[in-house]
Length: 90
Image 1 (cartoon, rainbow, N blue to C red):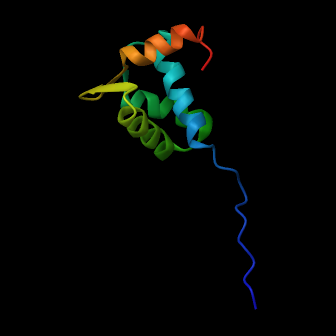
Image 2: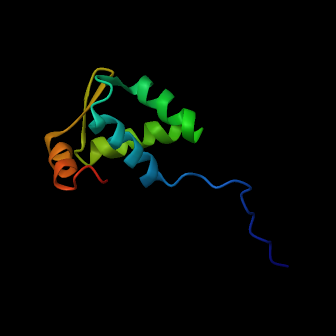
């Protein structure tokens, strides 16, 4: 007898969407500086998944799009240039 695949009752937000949300907040210039905790509270409040924000920050760091200075998170020059080249449309 084959087991039925389990189906999750809710859809998780894809990681790329959380990464995009983090970058948009960092690049918007509306609130500087951002701390990891600030980003986690801001984005987790709308997406209700604080671990996804930590994962997104780590991924963006690994891809060279954010810098960490203690608890502060800032976009790299490459992220800023990309944002400008795309006219703010990530």
